Image (cartoon, rainbow, N blue to C red):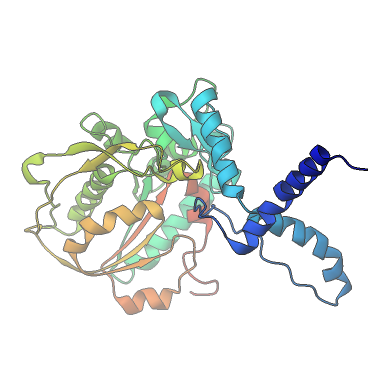
Length: 361
């Protein structure tokens, strides 16, 4: 006969075992909301096909693993303890640097190259460099035939600009990064100019912060600095184009909450504030020449540029960074400028990807 204390323990054990399943189906408690940087497993469907039946147990396991009750809350608790007590990141895609800086290890997903490139582990071959040059020159020539000015802008990775805050374990091997290779190769082997924003941003960071501490992107002042370089380039071809000014040249640095995308990956964005947000007012008008249309292909770094680019064009058409786009569609927009902005980690992805659909002359 089972003793009463043993019965109580068995009942408690059953409750602990089934409570997460009940929460998954009934959503009794409000849990921490978190959208992961991947597609979660979908609820499996039981089908009559033999292959589907074989997959069903595995699909169930994946679904329960991604949606089990209290999953995010338990992961969050583990993250909080490891970050605060041990000072380490439990998330492979987030690297904890010095002075509370967070950095993005994009290779984990994969999402381009940050740390492998920074350490000089994946240099481009001569063949790869030449293929990138040909890609840009081909685009440039095609647009030039129709009176369209084509600009390629590469935004440095956060660790390129703020490498002094990387952990001591991240050591460069002396080889150049892909951006360093590519910029030098284009200077020496092509008449087409590629805008490498490293120098401009390194100079700007002496004045104000240009990247967030808890996010993988540049802040408002970083985006403004990149914008000024783009307008400077445009003014070489379109005289009279002038950048918007910051009112009274006043930029404030402030703490904001919640933290950025890297803090969110740790499930701690409500616990980690962002210390390097910048704020400033801009003049409402450029006072210079206004162009007709801009065709703007960009990744997430381009999102912060719209605020500054809109006053310079009557119309701005923005498109996703890696989706091939039909040449006829671009011509139909009749842009004066095609602007292609992407992060350093996407050099081979953004430029090897066809800008136009295959087969377009």
